[in-house]
Figure (tube, rainbow, N blue to C red):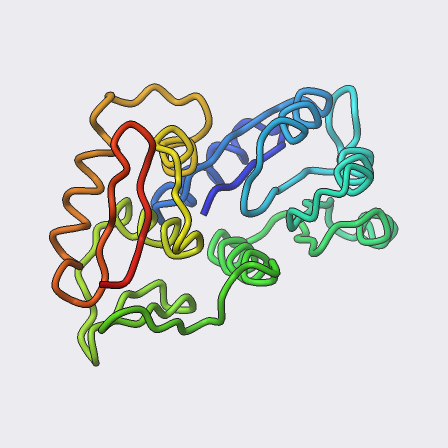
Length: 221
C-alpha cells in the first residue's frame, strides 16, 4: 500500500511513517498544506492521511481540492480530541474517515486497510489466483492451508502486482509504490525483489512476466 501523509507534527509523522513501513508500506510525508496539495495533484496513492491544521493550507481545503479534481483516493483526516465540528466538516468536504488524536497505530493501520479496500478497482478480501489465494484481511498469500513466507517488501510487491494483475507496471512506478516517491534506491533493487518473489510463486499457477526495459506483470500460467 502506498500512503501519502500530510502532517506537520514531525514526531507524530515519524511514528506513523515507521509503523507503516514496518508493515511493508511505502510512505511519502509532507509537512506543509500547499506542498501536500501540489504533491497530490501530481502523484497517486492508495490512501492519503491528512491533518486538519496545517501551515499555509488546511487539511479541509486539501480534501476539497482533491475531490474537485475528480480524485477519489480514500482520505483519512486526523483531528484534535473532542472537536466534533472538525470531523463533520471533514466528512462533508469529502473525507472518507477520521481518527481522533491521540490514537493507536494498530487502529490507524486497520482503518487504512479498510479504506484501501473500498476503492472500486480493489478485489474482494479473498482472491484466488493460480493455485493460491490472497487474504487481504490477514495480508497473507495462502497455498491451501499453508501460508507462504514472504518478507514484508515481497508481500507489498505481490499486493501491488495483484491489484494490477494483467497490466504492465513500470519499474519506476513499482519503486515509488514500495519505497516512496523519489526515494533513492539501488538501480537493481526492484529486479532483485521481483526475482525473489518469482522464485516463490513460480510453479503454483502464477508467474511474474518481464517486459524488458518496461516493467512487470502478474499473470496466471
